[in-house]
Length: 70
Image 1 (cartoon, rainbow, N blue to C red):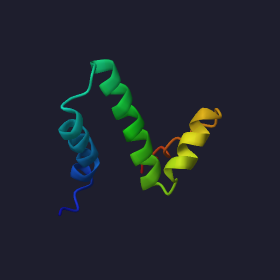
Image 2: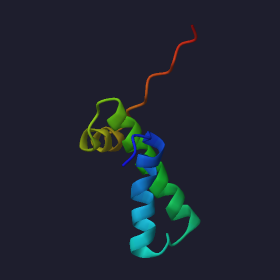
Image 3: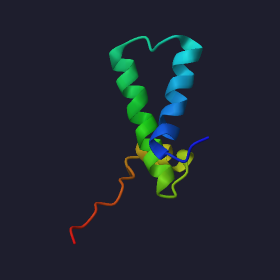
Image 4: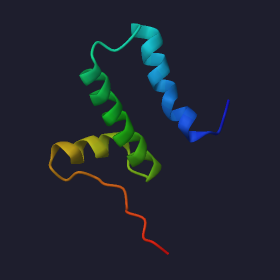
């Protein structure tokens, strides 16, 4: 087990590839990864997946805060 967040984010991708063998298309892969990235980022900021998806579909897209220069 590792605490590396990058490795934890990739674990579901590797599991999906093991189960299905691969994604069907590059477009499908890109879309799936975009959704995964959005949900992972929302979760890291305290937004649960259901709320993030609901907000995306209702036009109130959640966006991570922009870091201000020091």
